[in-house]
Each structure stands twice: as structure tokens, then as C-alpha cells.
Length: 223
Ligand SMILES: Cc1cc2nc3c(=O)[nH]c(=O)nc-3n(C[C@H](O)[C@H](O)[C@H](O)COP(=O)(O)OP(=O)(O)OC[C@H]3O[C@@H](n4cnc5c(N)ncnc54)[C@H](O)[C@@H]3O)c2cc1C
Image 1 (cartoon, rainbow, N blue to C red):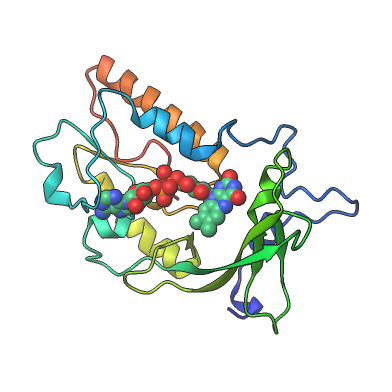
Image 2 (image 1 turned 60 degrees about the vertical axis):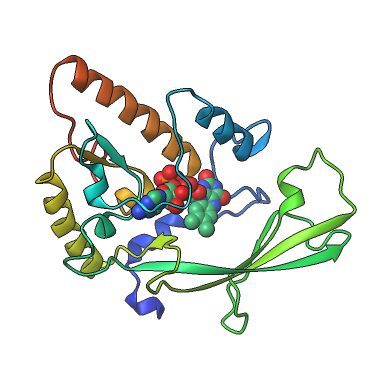
């Protein structure tokens, strides 16, 4: 996208520093789950009350017969994109292996117009307490998401926000379903925020059930 098409507010996302702190975030505490996210999610899914159906796409009609649905898929797809598709950027990840240390840090961004990828991630640097001779790296190529691509980053420009408001109205008129997560609310969320919101949603839902009230379409407003 040409910079003139971007809202000025986008600059707020980008930390600018005049020191040598190379963390992306300013947070006082920053961490990864002790054994990684896979182990953490596996432990959650181990709960006897949870059944998983893999390779099965959820469609609205499948929600019938359930007391309540928490939908973490794309908001527009729940409504079969009956208005228009909400715009997303997607990424193509291209792996390469390296003998040794490729870039000395977990993530290196490339802002130059002449470089076709936006960043390189060298995963072993996320766990500096481990030792690895070789390295696995990924180049990330950003492009507009087409049908069938994984939606990664919501665009949320003026046009998309208008469309989003229309989908929010549809969602608010729907009963028995709560839209959750980055796709259900069409927002970019970091992991700490995702986990916070999931816990708040669970508690909010519990409170509604206790009070004999219906759960809303959103516990966190997308707009
Ligand atoms: C490229 C990228 C890099 C990121 N890097 C970081 C980072 O460095 N640090 C950080 O804190 N956060 C990062 N994030 C953000 C973080 O990963 C996400 O916000 C978080 O995973 C969102 O969790 P979620 O449960 O809302 O959505 P997801 O993890 O996307 O889960 C939604 C799930 O719903 C499934 N689903 C969708 N539709 C259907 C359907 N119809 N039927 C069945 N299943 C369906 C999807 O397959 C998916 O498994 C990054 C995100 C992206 C996209």
C-alpha cells in the first residue's frame, strides 16, 4: 500500500526509540510459556469436557442444538460474507536452513522497497537458553489475502470499518453465539491480550449464566 493510503494513527503501532533496547514491546515483564505454546494449549485441550473435531469447518447451521456457541472464525464468514469480504493481509512463509547463526536475533525487519520480504525470523533466538548449531529461518512475504488464504492482519481502513459495523449489527441481532478472538472481532491481538480476553469472556459468560441472562454477541466490542 502507498503510505498516503495509511491512516496517521498507524504510527502509534510502531515503537520509536532512541536507545539500544531491541525489544519490540515496552512491557515490564515479557515471557514465553515455559514449555512453549504447543504444550500450554495441549494441556488446556486435555480437559475431559473438551472434544476436538479436526479438519471440520464450522458453519452457522452446525451451531443449532448447542446451548451457546463461541465462534473464533472470521466474523464475515459466519454470515457467509453476505455483505462483502472484510479485507486482510496474508503472509507467505518461505523456510531456509542455515549452518550457524544467521542474523543474531529472533526477528529482523526489512523496510526497504527493494526487499520483497518484510522480515526474517530465526526461531532459535526465541529460546536463548537453548543451544543449536544449525538454524531454521523464515522469510515473510506480505500480500493481500485472497479467498482460501489464511487471514492474518485485518486492514481496518475506513471502508473496512464501515463494513465491520454492518457485520457487528448482524452479529448483535443473532442469538446464542458469542464472537471471540482476533478473527471473531476483526482485530489484531497480541497473545497476552488474547489470553486476557479469553479469561474475561469465560468469566463474563459464567456471570451471565448465573444471573439467568443471555450472553451478548461480543464481550469485547470490535469497533
Ligand atoms: C503472522 C502473525 C504473527 C504474530 N506474532 C505475534 C507475536 O510475535 N507475539 C504475540 O503476542 N502475538 C503475535 N500474533 C498474534 C497472536 O498469534 C494471535 O492474536 C492469537 O493467536 C489469536 O488467537 P485466536 O484464538 O483469537 O485466533 P487463532 O489463533 O487464529 O485461532 C482461531 C482458530 O479458529 C479456527 N477457525 C477459523 N474458522 C473456522 C471454522 N469455520 N471452523 C473451524 N475452525 C475455524 C482457525 O483455524 C484457528 O485455529 C501474531 C499473529 C500473526 C497472524
